[in-house]
Image (cartoon, rainbow, N blue to C red; front, side, top):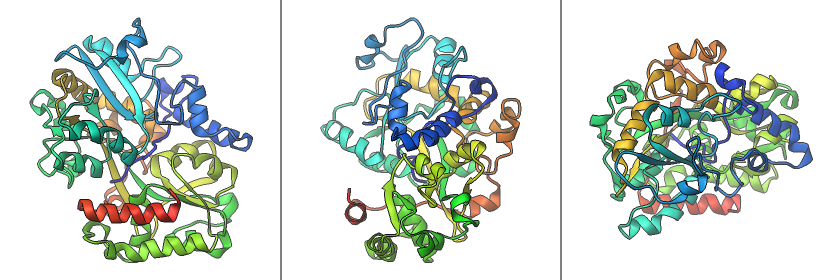
Length: 415
């Protein structure tokens, strides 16, 4: 599964939804303000979140000085540092207590929570020099996407999880046990999961979209957005060409997908390549369609029914973001308590209500019925077996092949 790669803000639960800015409101506001030139990163910065450069405010426990949480975590069980994607957890706002502060209140552990991951490759470039020297980075838990977690595991830069201290790990859904990036299940637990497919504005398209071919229809020339997450974009295009993306071994295996993407760019089909910032263009009609993520569109559609998500007939890509412990993490006991806490179905339901993605925890749907019955019935959040069968996860690539894919993709998108 691939990443929110610049995961946006989330959410809309009943208890959390009373806050001043839920994920759904955040996305809707981003769309409404798009015409003024205020982007989602700028909006997040204005709301005290991401500053647009992958650096975000940390969450300190109530009554503490945030400056004191900036030091590297130390001690085995009374401190914890978790580095995650932007707006990927329910916050404390307007009197409602978010997951981080509920955890602090329940355990007494002083927690630093940072929204510093903006993309997998960017984050890898930041931590590689440190971990590559055999030194530890400050966070006790980080949240790369599965394929990146696999790279870190294979490099020997992760410690096994203290699963004997995480009894709620038994609640992990069956389909995410022993994933390809962590075959023994020793090094990772999924944080959230989701899908990539076609996001479109039916007020602009005038019809339902069902195929990746629709993104290349000359009718929508100059109105198409293409995602800068290589695995989702190339994965979806490759699947539409009949390529099995779970068994890619060389660049040649996926070369036709790169060729189709480059031809579309040269023909003027693509308005722009986007990351997390596609909400404005999609809701305002600058994009007729783009490659988007299921959780985002599920939430956007609640305020703008014209915004829709479709699994292409050829299938969608699936991804999962993980919780892993970088080598040398010192707060193992605290990390175990955190993982056990968020794998409790009641706690996981609070997160799901805000993020709108697929929870890896069994029992969340039942718990969510008391928080947000509408979301509990959303097939993008709780997909059935038929939907899951329509998806594929991008293959784990060797380092040299990965380099070929990244170089070709970067050249096409101008990165």
